[in-house]
Image: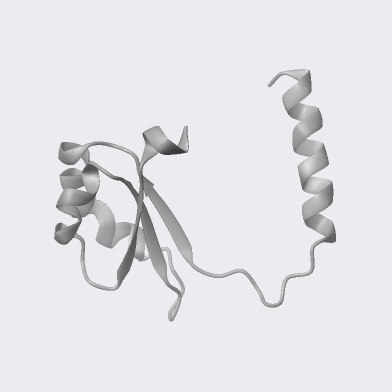
Amino acid sequence: MSFALRITDIFIRSRCRKLDRPARASGVLLLSCGGLGDTVLFSHVLPRFRKLAEPGEGVSVLLRSDGAKTAFLFPSGAEKIVVDFTRLR
C-alpha cells in the first residue's frame, strides 16, 4: 500500500470512530460485479452466503446493471441493489 493510501486510511478511520451510530450495524452486503454469466453462477452460491447473516438480519446484493437481468434467479428475501458502473465511474 502506498504512503498516500495509508495516510488516507488513517484519516478516514479516525473520522469514523467519532461518528455516533443510532444502533449496532447489521446486515450483510454481497457484491456481484460480474456480467450475466457470473450472476447466474453467483445465484447458485448465494444461499451459502446468506448463512453469514444472523437471524433477522437482511441480505443485500449489489449488482451491475447488465447482470441484474438475471437477478430473478436469486432466492426471495435478498434485496437487490442495481448500480450502473459506467455512470458510477
